Image (cartoon, rainbow, N blue to C red; front, top):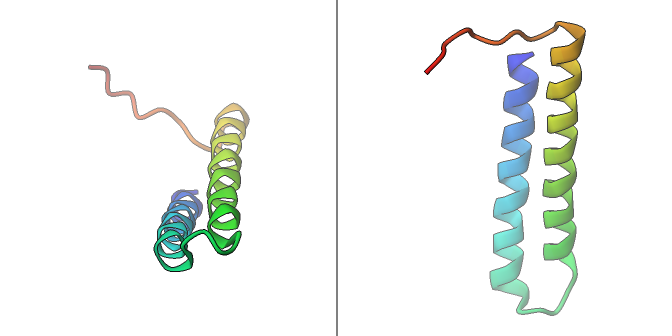
Length: 67
């Protein structure tokens, strides 16, 4: 499960970085930035749903550290 979360985070960061590159290069001439940021939002929501589902299914457990 930790590897899946790491892969999602890498995908989210890659999409965010590509959105920044498209913002700087395209100067508003295309929709590539919007598509990259849409992928980022979709991956973030999917990761959140995966974490909530895996918690309720018992695949992940809280670490027990209380502040």
